[in-house]
Length: 210
Image 1 (cartoon, rainbow, N blue to C red):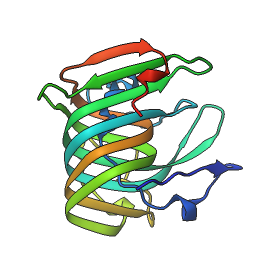
Image 2: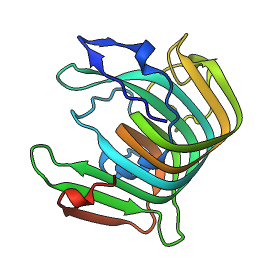
Image 3: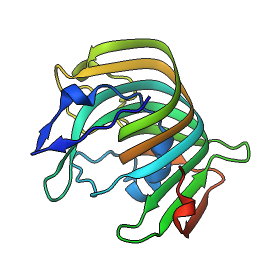
């Protein structure tokens, strides 16, 4: 499944936005996003670019997903699909970031050698994903402001009620399993994460994850 969205003139085109089912593979980018004692920041300004993430397999518990917008420092509005996850185990992760204006790529790999990476209290925002997904006990069409899965005191996203805004379309599941996924992400926040079997490289375009 592959959903891509754009914002024009500061307006969000929700009809084109649709619903994207999101894996937590982007946990790798937490190395750059930062974690402050497990407390998720309330007001976030994102950078002007996204990054690529691949995962061979991810198993997550307490999954919920909803639509919202992010904002860059210059005021650009970016519509995204955001997921909140209570916990996850990720195998075969790869995250790559292209250095703006250059051919250089920063790559991080983790979760290999039979040692999955682990995350708790993760929220991630992205605009596309390709892969396979399996859900257990899923609810589709839930008001996003009423969802609580993946949203303990330390896992809740930057909202004061539920996971999303009132009347916004949401979905939630007790368990979600994703395999062979590629995604384009904009931001990740985490309470805790462990990047087992971590490898970092800087080089040319061949280091892109996909």
